[in-house]
Image (tube, rainbow, N blue to C red; front, side, top):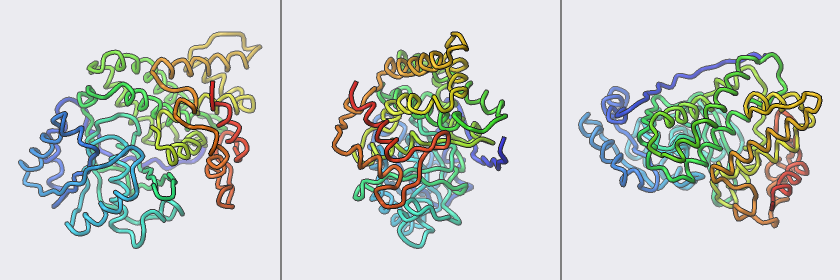
Length: 394
């Protein structure tokens, strides 16, 4: 096991009706709030009204910035930074899923950053401070409600980059599983694929003697696999949503990755898909993950046998470990398909015209600074291109 430094100060308030406490919870921490949200679904559900009422009852002034889209845009981040400076906002309340939270985090660090905040994503510089961020979660998927990470899309450059800092972990996150009841089935499925990928990126490792985090990863994955079909079939199954929502948080708060080398190749490959084609992140991960597994598993056979047996429940002869792994990957693919997720790039509306470009961008080769992606097995642009081509069509 590797050395690690785990710091997770996020207060998670979980359960029915918890969102109604937001005003009284934020009042001691802020003098003016930016309410940041998406396309307006929170207004249709009644959540917007409840949040406004809570803020008003607490006497906490606020300004609003809606319009967050999936694969959150840099242009809206720039708008939010200027708004916060003009209005002297000292806390951002993100109401929504990962996109709203990631956008809020970008705004939060941009308020104090001297320059274009995109340079932090592009160059990976350090930040010294950020406005505090609070969250009311409406879509369990990205795990951004508990992480110090943010991902933003530069729509002009067609680039999608992530950034992480302890300063970006939310001050407070509220999770009421009842708020998930109205989610469309495609968003449920995409969210499930996203949170599972957050575990996979940590689970598949070269690091030895990680029994505890192995077991934590496996428990989270099995919990998701068990409960995801339940919420898909009955979106008002509160108990199943509790399991899914909490799994999404644990999947990305850092705990399951402690002490182990991590991978993140699938996320790197997917960011190129969504940066250019603006597809749902989870859908892209569902297509890429089984293909990545098939490409790398022969070099790391024991790790994938463990996955097939302990997570996917495969039984078979250990004299034929490859057959066990192939069955495990096949079961994962079938699970994704039963959730209604795509299996090919063609289903995502992606043709072959820009596969090489995306492979080179994913590894930096397009910019003359190639660095392989992935921790388990290093992937160069030719490897990424091979994976892309393997899932172009069925």
